Length: 106
Image (cartoon, rainbow, N blue to C red; front, side, top):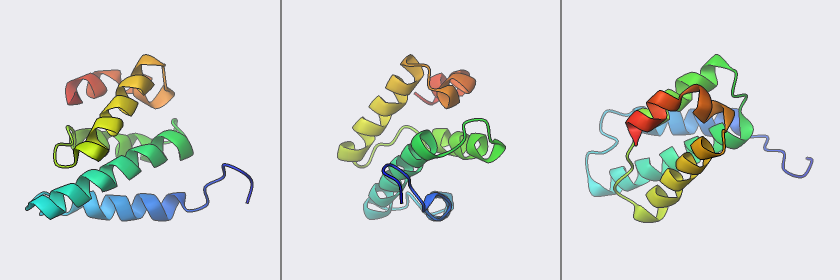
């Protein structure tokens, strides 16, 4: 594997989708914390390992935005929110394409 190459993108995204799509994902403190962590992982994989032009990436990113703000786990939520703001400010393609939705989520 080349340096920086992540080979588990689809498996990771599928696992995150599964967690954050459960109707009870924020039912209690433990599930909400677990969900916040899954949302953070989901966002990072989308930002760094997915094609920002792909329709599935857009669908997943909108799903991530719908989960915001992350509230349960400050150690996870603050860096994820900061990453989102920085990516918007720095013109990350995915954030730029969904700018209105990003601002609405914040």
